[in-house]
Amino acid sequence: MKYDLKKKEIILNRELNKLDSFVLDFIRILEKHVDYVIISGYVSIVLGRTRITEDVDIFIKEISEEKFLKLYDDIKKRGFWCLNAEKGAEIFDFLKNKMAARFSRKEKPVPNFEVKFPKDPLDKETFGDFITIILPKGKLKISSLERHIAFKRYYLASDKDIEDALHIEELFKDKIDHGKINKLKELIKIKKNEEKKSFFKAR
Amino acid sequence: MKKKRVFLKPGKDNKEERINFVKFWVNYIKSHSDKEWSSQQNMLIDSQI
Image (cartoon, rainbow over all chains, first blue to last red; front, side, top):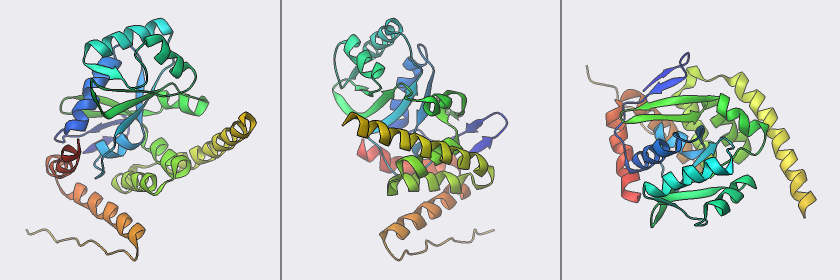
């Protein structure tokens, strides 16, 4: 594994597993239609963490309904389906309302992709703060290691998430920008407060 | 030259045990080729999908 900080690239000469193949197959469809960044658990898993996940979280840039319907058409043609609804307009509505839509191989709900539009400016920043993983059979865009650690440690923060963060911290010890993590930590605090406020407002 | 074996430090509780294993496994990744460590990880992942 080689992390080139300047190029923001990790060359990973790993053997691919079924989860990696699932991810690469779906990304090949997705990237023809929309910009994306993979976030959360799979980031740690593709970089070696010894655990499995049933879903791969991904942000896609907000697109028009027309563009989404073309993407959805392509998704269906390539043997995937949506777990939430059949009609494209309905799925787009979920995304527009900041909910996730899950896609899996037809009739195989696990594993699946949890596709989301970014909810707020901090989420949107992910599209400018990513690194590329170069695998033997394709490339993947993942959130920067610092962003990944910050969200795992200070936003999600379960034992599993802390371990996911620790895995990356230990693996890239001398290449992590801790100043950047601390800045993100403060922004996450604000995001959490905003979410708390809107939760109580909605009740 | 024979590599010096690294041992896994037992934890005082489940949480510490898991954290120690994360560190132990990262050390394994760093000291083995991508192909070697990923084939170990793939046994776990492929058996569950």
